Image (tube, rainbow, N blue to C red):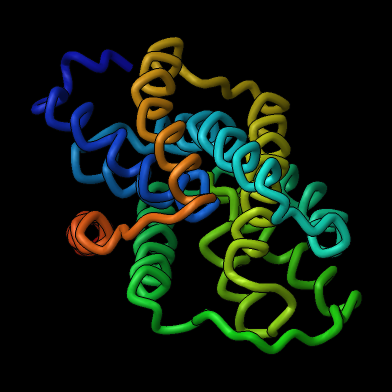
Length: 250
């Protein structure tokens, strides 16, 4: 991958930290946003998955650090999902799907991310119920496999699940999701390594750009921030990328 041969790459580099900022502020690594952005700028499909996983590792780590330091991390809730998600993310990471199928799956996943950003589900509730361990283990396995297969961390799925089931509050869900994303991304990347796929060296340049937004987003998100306008911008990016993925998969 030669970044500077990609058309409008400087616009891509300008948007990237805004995406990492918004995702980090809500405890996510941002893989769905990075994948959408890479799809919009016509990155090669084979480079998208390892690059998104690498970006996730760094951004989710920053986000988790701030939420953990603010006292929102629930270890029991995290473990209930992570025990099964980690091995299944590794299995998903070992599987390479056809480019057209990959685009369709990713396009559907981006719609899910848009619904999450629009607060269609997973809204804040003051009510909490005990964790159903067996259900959490099953959910963790499914999300983990999908995470490794597509190149995400699974936070955009896990956060609304936690909130819908009333197993945690908003910032608690964000803290758990941040570490969940990190372990799944690491496991999925190890799965990629096991079949000989490693991130391009230029991907680390993208990490540096993304961290600019991640540090600020993680800090402000764990305190207080209104991301309304950035959220609308991200929704536009995700929707446009999803449409492009569906059209190019036909």
